[in-house]
Length: 318
Image (cartoon, rainbow, N blue to C red):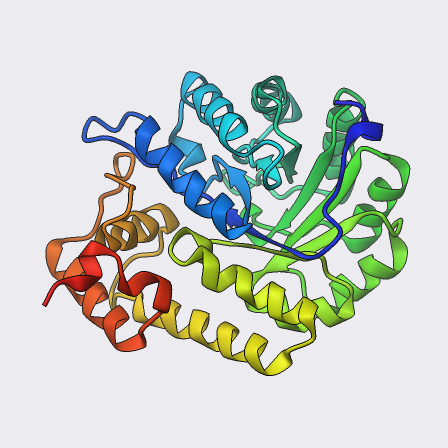
């Protein structure tokens, strides 16, 4: 895709790290996936497909990723931003192989994770620079860089800024783990057209500092609520913006299950089951939580009263 044809959204975007609905055989549930994507698009939410965590991208085979991207592009292209989030890779060649699948499907932007630190290896900044330069010299396509603590380390702000300023195909940087000073330094150093995103926890801290939105799991459950935070912010209604943001936080607290091991795919699929929304099982070896946990989530959400969830069949149970 020529960069000249790439239209970046003008207002902040709430991106969903989309779940990947599966059937009872752990195959892609195309009908459920399309329904899920339409719900996100109707709310105006941007979408990242095949995320390593919430989207179970680390467990999907190349042909499954190909189908995932193809369906996402057919449902979302031209309606909301549709980006790909290929899983972490240890080598640049591995990342390039997966990124090509997304580019061939026609996503708007493909995200590139940092090289993954595996088996006790530490990634030196010089090695990381070589990793990114290998990819960026071979990818003539709009790219987002991910600076994520899940990789085991964070790229130095100086390196991130240098890459953004040298490679014009970098249109965004996603920050999960960097502090607010890191964000401010990066905003000060990169080309103004490079868009910076954080997570839902930093959204209202970073928007006034020049952020362009966030990546989050929460829109999988309540996309209209999540989008309203950005809409109220853009309208200058800080009271309603804060109320919507607080409701989103209460919703996430209601979804917590004490003693649950960390695992975004397990969490997302359990909540979707509780809400009666397309999701299905998690890819093995992960499992959706038991019926007691599902029912607890339902009851907790009824107390929180997120308006767009109250009409769902699962939430109407006595």
